[in-house]
Image (cartoon, rainbow, N blue to C red; front, side, top):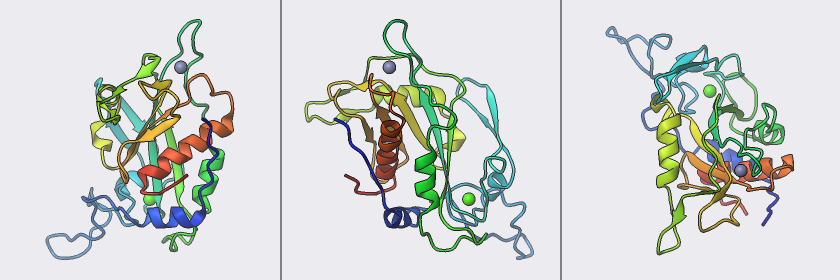
Length: 236
Ligand SMILES: [Ca+2]
Ligand SMILES: [Zn+2]
């Protein structure tokens, strides 16, 4: 079933202010007691869960495969003086004669980004409004599966197969800081579901449009819906 989702800016405002990373710190001191914002690796002035040193420059992350990837957070528009949300996105490859694959276009989410940018959050330190959303697709896909996971006797989705993919794809150092999303085909036993969020709030979700993925608005609406759930929003 398709669901067109419109999130209001007010909802986003509530979410952005609700869950700073538990290990973030807004202030720090050197041995002499003076603030040392430029060198504290954990300092997170805007409380968006991502360290200032990352957001005002680059960070190199190590993937579970052992490969490294440099993320130019500043270059993609991140800032330690503005609330940002970073979504690392895995995607299933295509399958011959079956599915063209789920790799997102680099520009796949303009309306979602606009909705976040229009959120009336309390003034950012840089004087600019809103939340900046940054979607970072993985550079390579994961093997296509017609159905990912299954449900248990209670009808609850079992996340083991998702976990297997996340554990193989998502840099450990980003856990708790970035969101992790997976563009899959369908979810096992609940194949009519277009996506699901793991916990509310949380940082993990799946989008599962099956064969119905040619409509960019459908992808964006579902992405927004599930991302919104992870931020503690009750969206319909
Ligand atoms: Ca920020
Ligand atoms: Zn597929």
